[in-house]
Image (tube, rainbow, N blue to C red):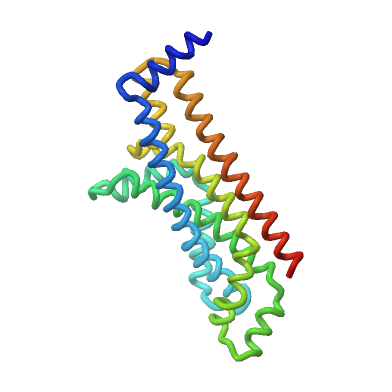
Length: 232
């Protein structure tokens, strides 16, 4: 059995430096995940602020309606279809790399979920905080920026970290838009060696390891936030 395992490792990863497919795929997966998370957080926060402002002041009615439609469409359609529309329809005549398209696609998809995470955080802040800020002479925007958003961000931080973990696994479909991500790297090795078990199990193990590592740090973050709340 050990000899069989050694042969499988040599065939799938050592021979012809096939391990580089995994290394390059992991690098692309992390790049896409990181920048898609940033896009999702920024756009999601903007959407959440628009929707929260409408709920509180009835301003931005048109923008709020657009945001609601956007969230419904994004959350109601598969992310792989969204990626394919971006790559094969919207960016079809432009020299745009698959990685950029994947970042945009996953970022847009993530923003719909992040927007609701932020909105729940903003709504969890007591209305008295807003009233206190306004009574101090701050404008609505200043109160949001200096008082409400920092508190809401602290509340939703663990959920945002979990969204990052979810994105790592969601990027496994990036191969549909000509991106050599971690999953695609394993699939390329499988197509060269005709051994499905070894490369796919290794890819699955890497995803599991990444998930466990980031989940550990999220739990540590949650404990730290709870400790700070008790000491406050």
